[in-house]
Length: 195
Figure: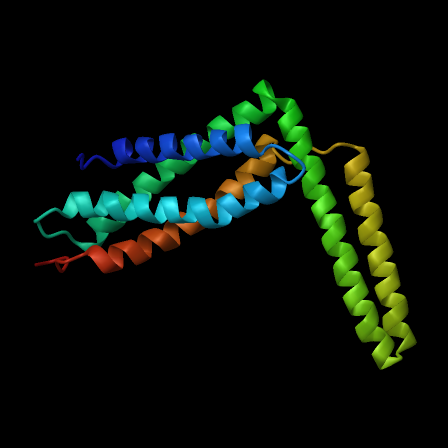
């Protein structure tokens, strides 16, 4: 058991890549995007909570640690694991298997189109009950514009795994790591700062 957050973060990176390649090799089919989203929403969240928690627990051991020590241990662990994972996934999808990238991008846009259709039908029923013609006309215009934008994105084969896009996604992950580290540090600190 190491107290070094970089080493624990590297272990978290290896676990993340194991999950990534299991999903890649066994679930790359017509539901690849949905499977990926479910694994990210549930499996990876659990993995990163566990990784941050274990890292701080190992640091603490039988000693006392302050909130800043616990926060730093958790955040560095999560940052290293997440950064290396995002970088590796970026390289893999953009330089090793671009077909997987294109399939994920296509399935993402198709999911958006399906969700748009479902939302449109629901709002259309709600607007019909109101019998307000301006709302119905506005809904039709919004739906048409949104549909055209998604169809245009599908035709031009946008790369949703570009460096720019993944950088924005990683910014969201950093917020998640920050919040998670705040919670973990709050639970596992056992010494006041000036004690």
